[in-house]
View (cartoon, rainbow, N blue to C red):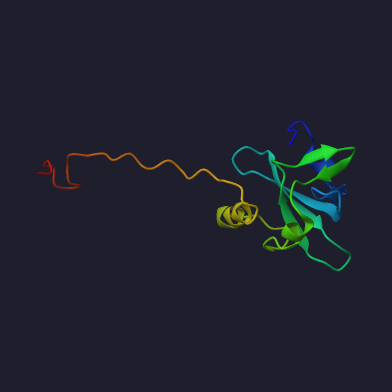
Length: 125
């Protein structure tokens, strides 16, 4: 998604799926904890419906509307974590998996031989 867009300007915009079907209206925007960039949007799917979380990275702002490159059914089946709360890393991972988006695993810790046992002052055999 365009990173120069103010996330507050997304709120209230109409959202459409990849086939042009209306999903709802952007209710909230969630920023990445590390970068501060917009990462997720909560889409109000109807007057009495829950919000559906959608990833902003593959989405586009086209003619003033948010175009989300997924089918409406998949979007409406997204895990519901409630709005107005912080998304935990585990919740974000669930959302990435739901949408089939690859998330890079953290790099493995280096395999190091530290040489000394803690508190012994001697080297490990």
